[in-house]
Image (cartoon, rainbow, N blue to C red; front, side, top):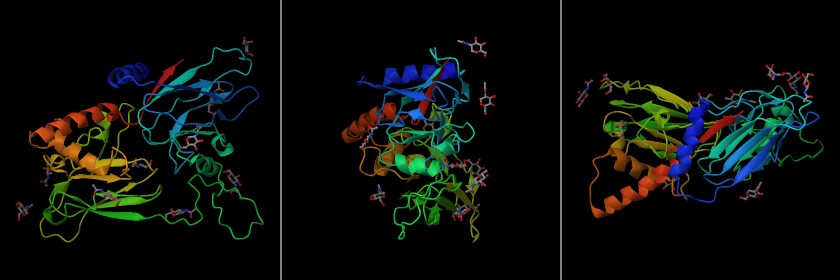
Amino acid sequence: MFALSILAVALTLAVIPPVRSVEFTITVGGPGGVIAYEPPCVNASVGDVVTFVFKQKNHTVTQSSFGSPCTSLNGGFDTGFIPVAANNTNGPFPIAQLTVQDTNPIWVYCRQTGHCQQGMVFAINPAGKFDAFKAAAMGQSTTTATASASNPATTTNSTTAATSSNSTTDHHILVGNAGTLTFSPANITAQPGDTVTFEFRAKNHTVTQSTFGAPCLPLAQSSQSGQVGFDSGFVPVSNGTNTFPTFTVQVNDTAPIWVYCKQQGHCGKGMVFAVNAIETGANNFDAFVKRAETLNGTSSTSGAGRTMARVSMHVALATAVGGVVLGMLL
Ligand SMILES: *[C@@H]1O[C@H](CO)[C@@H](O)[C@H](O)[C@H]1NC(C)=O
Ligand SMILES: *[C@@H]1O[C@H](CO)[C@@H](O)[C@H](O)[C@H]1NC(C)=O
Ligand SMILES: *[C@@H]1O[C@H](CO)[C@@H](O)[C@H](O)[C@H]1NC(C)=O
Ligand SMILES: *[C@@H]1O[C@H](CO)[C@@H](O)[C@H](O)[C@H]1NC(C)=O
Ligand SMILES: *[C@@H]1O[C@H](CO)[C@@H](O)[C@H](O)[C@H]1NC(C)=O
Ligand SMILES: *[C@@H]1O[C@H](CO)[C@@H](O)[C@H](O)[C@H]1NC(C)=O
Ligand SMILES: *[C@@H]1O[C@H](CO)[C@@H](O)[C@H](O)[C@H]1NC(C)=O
Ligand SMILES: *[C@@H]1O[C@H](CO)[C@@H](O)[C@H](O)[C@H]1NC(C)=O
Ligand SMILES: *[C@@H]1O[C@H](CO)[C@@H](O)[C@H](O)[C@H]1NC(C)=O
Ligand SMILES: *[C@@H]1O[C@H](CO)[C@@H](O)[C@H](O)[C@H]1NC(C)=O
């Protein structure tokens, strides 16, 4: 499995045009029982390599989410426990490497009992939210709006992003409403902890997670890091019914979530959906729809269409491997 990961790294490096890639070295733990990653966060670009050097005593590098800092992310990476003896002061030390595949935040914690709650967390591209992430890991409220400042932030055992009001939203999406090949609305913004409930209105559709790079393939097929992704399976709705089946997905962080219907031909007709697509970047929702139509539709071969296809292909090479690849070198 690790050999595969390392192969994937090599492949990725071969495919992405040569950009100057930076290597970050993160020290994990240390002499005397240091419970920390040092430095605790980095800003990295696509293609950069993050090397974790495991020192004393017995830590992990485990992916989590902003919403649940001390819970391992479903399908995320995890080194497992890497013990380093207290008397091993000169090394060699085990390392784990990760190649950054996109600029979405990557949240990390140590799974050793109590370490996350003591603030042993790390992030790549936290976009200003590292302090909030760490505070949530340590169970501290991040609210600054308390009227009476008599008490310092109280600690609780919360492992979710701490917000004073525990209000989560359920976003309601109609699938195939009135016989159309649509998700409605098709593009929403949601907070970690929110849920998205899909209501199947007609025909025989699915709600299947994909990636920006491969809009019409299940995440499991395009993920290089073993992510599986959710899939409702086919949900047929009989004519004339007034009870509509639903499928609910929880939003765990602010990373974009890409979705399509895997019924034959639907994705290529633009039956796609996104949560937290970044509208100001190249990978916006409109570009996602166009990719689905270009890659799986019966799109035209006009000059403009061909240009679009070529541009899109370039994006695909850089993003099809979304997420991260973790290789262990022990
Ligand atoms: C990362 O970039 C942000 C600005 O986007 C900056 O405020 C922060 O200090 C940077 N962090 C590191 C570790 O370089
Ligand atoms: C490392 O920590 C894990 C989890 O607490 C434990 O199961 C394992 O035995 C530890 N390894 C060593 C060598 O202490
Ligand atoms: C560290 O301690 C263990 C057992 O206490 C011993 O077997 C090992 O040789 C020591 N290693 C070094 C580098 O001193
Ligand atoms: C936090 O959890 C620990 C063990 O689960 C418990 O002993 C402790 O009382 C809890 N603290 C608070 C503030 O709830
Ligand atoms: C927040 O709300 C959710 C859903 O209503 C509930 O399951 C959870 O226990 C609540 N958490 C707190 C700390 O009140
Ligand atoms: C729904 O679509 C799937 C895939 O095309 C098909 O296998 C299944 O039989 C369909 N179900 C119904 C009730 O039409
Ligand atoms: C539902 O109605 C449509 C058109 O009215 C028809 O094509 C389809 O076969 C019907 N489906 C079922 C399961 O009766
Ligand atoms: C969020 O986490 C839950 C529980 O681990 C998982 O079932 C769900 O699929 C995750 N949501 C996404 C969008 O990955
Ligand atoms: C999209 O096209 C790819 C490549 O031809 C194919 O493997 C995939 O099944 C198609 N997806 C859908 C939903 O039709
Ligand atoms: C996606 O949603 C955003 C915010 O609601 C909106 O500004 C944007 O136009 C939408 N994009 C598309 C392609 O519908």
